[in-house]
Picture 1 (cartoon, helix red, strand yellow):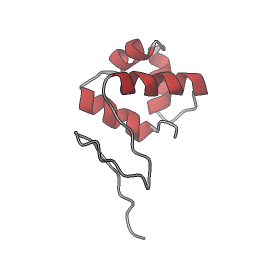
Picture 2 (cartoon, one colour):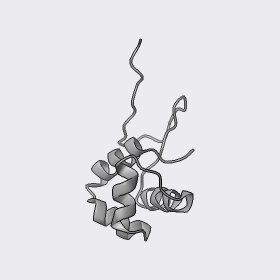
Picture 3 (cartoon, helix red, strand yellow):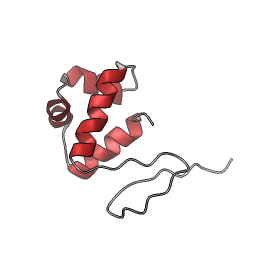
Picture 4 (tube, helix red, strand yellow):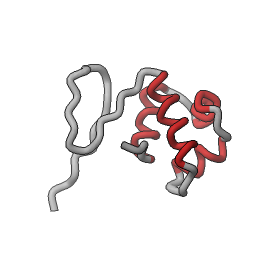
Length: 82
């Protein structure tokens, strides 16, 4: 599963991290974080670095359709019925 923009923003909020703190933790440039969270494409390697930094800080990601029994704080976006 690849990290999504919404997951990145939610993870930063849970950790109370600024974009700069995420960039430092992931060893990427602040412009990479800005581009990613702005919905622009970034290199797959950079996206992996962001996800690894979040995971190292204690964030667990749940993909659509997955369940989690780990407990802890988290967010999930439920699709709106059409």
